[in-house]
Length: 305
Image 1 (cartoon, rainbow, N blue to C red):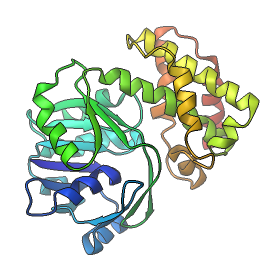
Image 2 (image 1 turned 180 degrees about the vertical axis):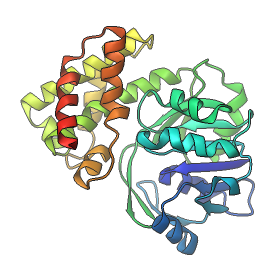
Image 3 (image 1 turned 135 degrees about the vertical axis):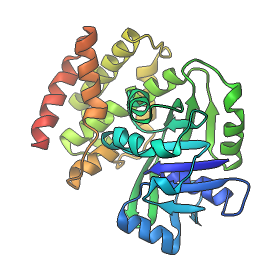
């Protein structure tokens, strides 16, 4: 198979390229890279610093030109949410009706954007529990997270994707092909969205929320609001999901900083609209009261001005 990893995707791309080097059974292609990052990967390979082992890898191709990819069998579309629509439009040249497009990024509206931009392809939803960043050009570091990766078709079909699952497993990914992918995506959204926006608003790591009584209460209430929204859109989340998410949050090192918080800190574009903006708009559309989301969204918008 020919697999394109598009956008950030450093951990997934690194693991795939490590197991399937150039000339092997599968071609791993990196696309849509920034100048210094692309230059470093072309010169020295991608250095992956991860909790399950470090590696320096070379893909079969690293390019900033989607036209060089040819038609791919699988596309892991991994840009930040604010770049997803444009990335999908640019990727259209490498996608045909048989290409399986997988969306591991944050948020629950990604499939709609990808389908709009691509206009074709078999678009699957996905999520991965991981925190990574580009430490320096050509170097991606995993900071936290169990690296659990879920993907699947919202219609519940499994068999057409077994070969992709097998490839991911062979690469050492902690992956699960699930018939209940929307439940998994919304479960992650309930976990990561309130943490991302509150760490960004208060400029504190995880511990700065969990060790503060008022902020912890706000975190719980925002998770509950996401649960109400999920129910309204027809996604049946597991019983006790809020409590389970809090336990999961407490399992991260107290100094863990979310990627959105780091983006705010360094003056980069943020996923405010992908995360809390989506919830606020969807809540208003469906008549679901989200008072804590409304308040925090307004505060974050003021922060970005």
